[in-house]
Amino acid sequence: MFTKVAALAVLATQVFAAPIELEGRASCPKIHIFAARETTASPGYGSTQTFVNEIISAYPGARPTQTQHHAPQSLTFASGTTSEAIVYPACGGQSSCGGDSYAQSVQAGVKAVTAAVSSYASKCPSTELVYIGHSQGAQIGDDALCGGGDYGDGISSTAATIAQYNFKAIIWTGDPRFVPGETFHVGSATHGGFAARPSAITCGKYQYDIQSYCDATDPYCSNGNNPATHNGYQQEYGAAALKFVKTKL
Image (cartoon, rainbow, N blue to C red):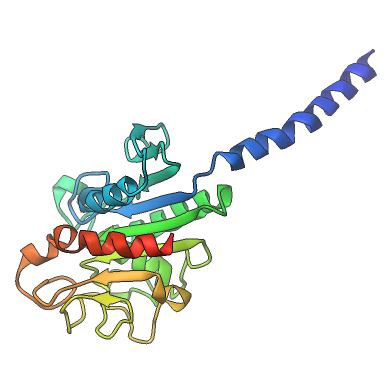
């Protein structure tokens, strides 16, 4: 009797294991958006929320509902598109964000991007990925996708830690890693950012899937003196960014 019961238990395990795995894969959305906020923005999407909303609204029936995955930063949408905010300090030494220095925050951010993307991609390898980052949020995405080292912020590794995954569109605004002459640059800037990427690092196969918005008067991605420029990309380039993303998905 014991042998028969044990055999039935093994058979049950074999029968139900595959459907459970298939169910997990079947629940993967067509599109998943990673978004990273700017320095000192409250946990969540920060200024990237505008871009996230525009992409979501481009697909009919996209109604956000709160989920328990990384709540409250993760949203699931009825359209089959999902999004999540990268959980990292987004700090520059201010007490309001925990006191981490800018370099500490960038280092933590790159690790957070790498962990979030690799974890998600291992579960849903065919899902089309989108990355949206503003300011420091763009910098950590740039470091992770393009590599090249970020020596001023304490990153000596030149590895591109998420370049192997299924990214289809990347939007960076006010990226401190901006370098003049990028094939994917949009805007009037002709001077690099304060953490400019080495000019030899071209972001490989993704250079035609990126749009990096930077204007000359931005004091962070370029050498301007108007912070309003840095905070205005969502309004100025939102429609253009959405049009670009839609050509890639």
